[in-house]
Amino acid sequence: VFLSFCRWFSKKSRGSEFLYGVQPIRAALLANKRTLDTLYVEELKSAHKSTNPHIAEILDLANKASVEIVTETKSRLNNLSEGRLHQGLILQTHPLELGPLLESLPTSNSTTNSAPFWVALDQVVDPQNLGSILRSCYFFGVSGVMICSRNSAPLSPVVSKASSGALELITIRNCKNLISFLEKSKSGGWKIYGTNLDGPAIELPTTNEIATLPSIVVFGNEGTGLRTNIKQVCDEMLRIRPLYSDPKTPVDCLNIGVAVGVILSHLRKSNQ
Image (cartoon, rainbow, N blue to C red; front, side, top):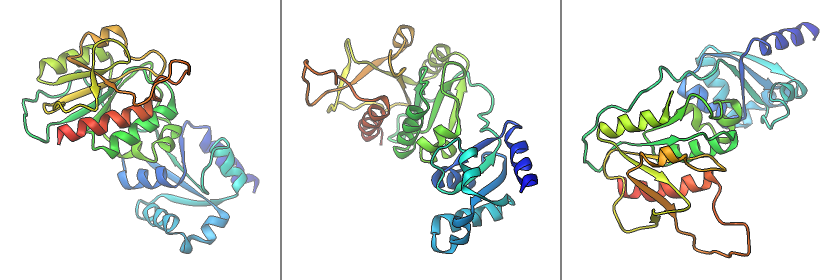
């Protein structure tokens, strides 16, 4: 037991990441974008794998990927997930690699109904919000998500869990300077949409066709929104029209994760 614990602790201390929960682990195994090391399975879950299709599938995927499978106690899994809900499964992996920094998206002059559509995030720092945004982006078929290499939430196991595994599946790239990235993409034929609570903006829902050209929609920080210099790059600003408003209450906007889902729903209808 002691040697097993030492091996567990040694692996944890080498900078590996530990994905937890059924959907993030299933997605990571299906996507195969990470270097995968060890799948830890709670003793009780392993014993009942035949009656749980999700666990049975994950064990099958791990075997096919030649991932080591280790049965562990619930308490050790709790330690690996730092007390978060792991559903009896933890996958030890290397961090997700995003590839080289992008300076712009490729030049595109497409005017078809299937015009590419990206989301860019300006300093979204909360991992739960980032996970929620990625889940919405994947659900609505966004071509890819651009994040800043600095001042953004890291692509951690918390983000993967909050995204229900979308982090593992969707295309994500990063850039060094978001303003420069947007300006260069705009010069290459991309239309840039921003989001704004105040000031002139297209209110959604609208009957106007939006995002029929190759488009990037930019969402800002949870508390401060888009930076002024980001707004200046945008061709159009968007805002969700509230259906109920009471100046006596503090509820004057949506959480960014919810707002992204609402806006993408409207934009993708025009984009398809």
